[in-house]
Length: 357
Length: 280
Image 1 (tube, rainbow over the protein chains, first blue to last red):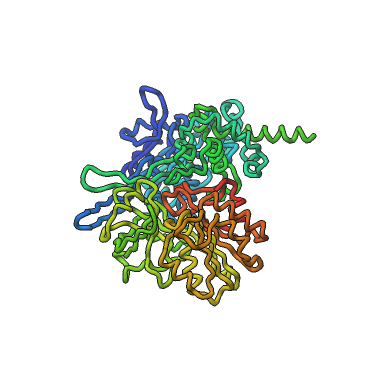
Image 2 (image 1 turned 90 degrees about the horizontal axis):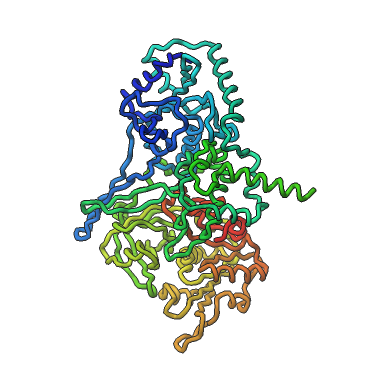
């Protein structure tokens, strides 16, 4: 553990930029919206800005990505196929613990199971992650309900916690250690660790006052979504509110569905792209010939909540799929973000329980 | 789970040459393929019931179940023209190149069904994946009891694999019931929907497994007929079809309830299918 003066904390970013493409939270001047984006000027970084509108996944699981380029000469019958990988070393500076947990969900999903996703693995293998403890929550936060905040426990290279005039710097990996050794920082003591714990507890205490948008006790519904006890009408009412825009999937730090398409390039070749997809789209499960096993919107809409909340699905992430960032509730035009639906499921069961009395 | 694929980029197709094309029935063609970069052009090891991802260059990729049996069978795919990509495949001529990734999926559970009667019930192009299983089972004839095929198509012109059917009709120890939906003058075989033939044909129920594959309507009729006759839900095996993009359990398009058809399937027992939590 080390200490760095608050006005020097961006020196870490300066040091990182020597070896990595740097990404961090910035405030877009015209709209005042926070984005997690590539950094041109170090002093653009706003470490204490609220949660960015976009999750960091778009850096290592891009919205659209070329995965193969190929050329087929129909006359000579010659075929050239080349996989396209992105192996650039990139540093994510100042991500919040919810987004780190989302990243870990994606790691477990893309790198686990029978097959490893090579494209994802190449993105991730040279990545440096600096997390930033939330010493106070934001309006839409619910990480205390999803066991993913307000601080990171593991999976970072460096973790920062603001302690008044200093930031506490914790090292989480060899890579992190090597970087800190280049910077001659002051060593932190036990008292600073205690102060961090105090800050975290204060932050948790502020959720009731500040994080007023969303509350969702995930653990209370995890075993209920797939029991079949929820009436079909419940999902129909949720389905009726869905605009099928897919925004919830795109802002979710742990949503991983993608589509693959072959596109002609300017020359004579083709490129195979993969791009984000959403289970709310009608074409998601439609087969060639038109048969669609999941045509009605409620069939598609409850899929997302099964994926995030059901016990069987949580096995692929080794935890529930929701990491409590609150972005889906924020963007949903139909007001059926995950926290609201979770709360509705809980109420539905309360109604049921009451009717039995 | 086994991570043997870790060092190979399974997302890059292998180049294969279309050696020969046969018209099976209207809109369905069989493509005999040779792997350009493999020894003898063979596909190598795979299991009956698995599937491959097939790239038509310039069009895209689709999932195709394998009609080929793993042993002593020329590698081929039988594909119905249904959309943009399969349409592109149907335009190809011998000598053209396509891409293949795979094999993917679990395959049929032959070890578990040794010593049993095996009944095949196929409707339309549902016959394609079952062809692989039939060829395999006939090559290991001693390991099974009675082997019976029910294959239904709309008209005589909708029957695929004609040469194989004629061979099988005369294969000793293989009972075949090939039927068309409605009688026509040039047809002297059985007629009627395939599920109606099951009861008439005195099939064994004890120590029996049934492989069922066909369009959803036919599938449901056959299942209710078989379960009514007393066949257990664990003894009915089918292979499912889904929209697929990656084949390796990552894109999630083929999810049904809690399973992914590409890595957990495509072969399921009827008991499993019933509990997937979604319609098939």
